[in-house]
Amino acid sequence: MTVSLVGMPGSGKSTVGKQLARALGWRFHDSDHEIEARIGTSIRAFFEQQGEQAFRDLEQQVVGELAAAGGCVLATGGGTVLREANRQALRACGPVIYLRSSPEELYRRLRHDTVRPLLQVADPLRKLRELYAQRDAHYRDAATYTLETGRPSVPTLVNMIVMQLELAGLVDADAVRGRHARSEPPAEEGSPAGDAPPL
Image 1 (spheres, rainbow, N blue to C red):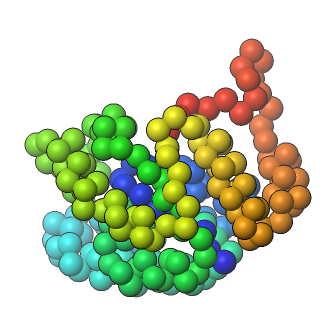
Image 2 (tube, rainbow, N blue to C red):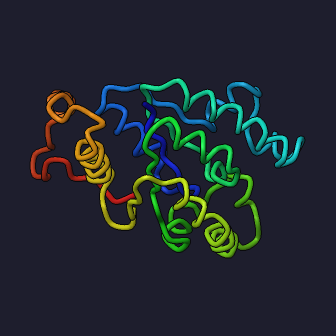
């Protein structure tokens, strides 16, 4: 089984995915990082040189391979859900989690971003609103579960996902709790255990 994370750029897929994989004792894959490793350059440079169509073709191949590998948590690129083939491949391999964030929340996190190709525009907030309008329905179509990322901290979101997987009988609750307890870092003096900023 593969647990896949979908959502807008900056919604926390990689951050949440890494901690979720640690909690489950699984491998973690980021499809964008895997693509960059294969092409030997940045996705932004590939976009500029080859165009979006070539990138989406490569993305479909990589996402299909990673999802089918199983035993992992997969963070996907923001536009992965645009292709029906990708949505089907993700759903076929396990639960899909939509980390849902409003364009305004995303803008606060990404306003200084210089990496994501689609955000290198004069008005990033307007672009985020356009992308959200185009993609939200596709994220919902792909998703088994939808989680709002506005207020919860990363550890809280991870716990919410684990709880959903436990309720669905997809993971061993006792094993996850035992692993989580062993990997939980001690709280700093004067701060509550597990305290972390929201995404």
